[in-house]
Length: 205
Ligand SMILES: CC(C)(COP(=O)(O)OP(=O)(O)OC[C@H]1O[C@@H](n2cnc3c(N)ncnc32)[C@H](O)[C@@H]1OP(=O)(O)O)[C@@H](O)C(=O)NCCC(=O)NCCS
Image 1 (tube, rainbow, N blue to C red):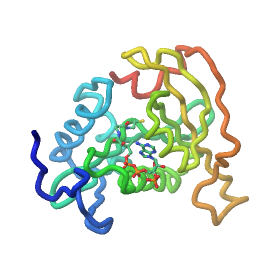
Image 2 (cartoon, protein in one colour):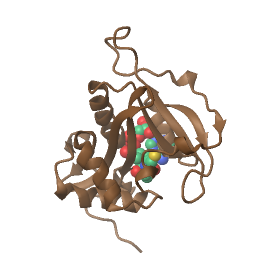
Image 3 (tube, rainbow, N blue to C red):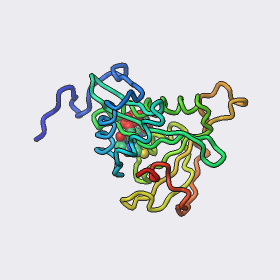
Image 4 (cartoon, protein in one colour):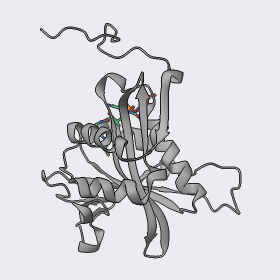
């Protein structure tokens, strides 16, 4: 039987206060193996080192890592750029290791990236999540993301994806709101994936 690891409580969860988690933006090559190790462990898609480098070299300010007592416990990797007529942010990868889940670490990581995107002039943020990934769908739903589209057989494992989207308010109309997208407006269009709908992430696999 597996023993309880040091620092873990009766539930197998790590015991920590929210203030003990340190969040840092991508700080250089020494962070790369930490990000890769977490993502490789937890996400179904295999990514090459070139994919990771593409994101963290071009948009280091959009990737964040969470540390607890020197250990990397979560990460988010993003990009932003012009897409058709929109300047938009894109969340490529998000992982929190199991003992640290359910304590708001992912919410904090994603919120930090979104804040930088907003400050950089993005009008919206998108990402894809497996339709079976209840945790991620709940997390992004709470943050105000809507289900914009269903992408059939999107992942290499054959699973469908939802494309999720967070629309920012027009700054002139809503100067005081940090982000705005009504969850009650959530809708989902079933749609077959078009070549131009391949995510920014898949283009770099
Ligand atoms: C999805 C994931 C990043 C969430 O990390 P986390 O730190 O536990 O998330 P948070 O604590 O910030 O959760 C915020 C909210 O999201 C929702 N949520 C998160 N995980 C959930 C789960 N497993 N089931 C249901 N709701 C969940 C809850 O509403 C939660 O708020 P609450 O705890 O007050 O109810 C983490 O489970 C993970 O790394 N999973 C594997 C990788 C993955 O799926 N990444 C996302 C790819 S799109």
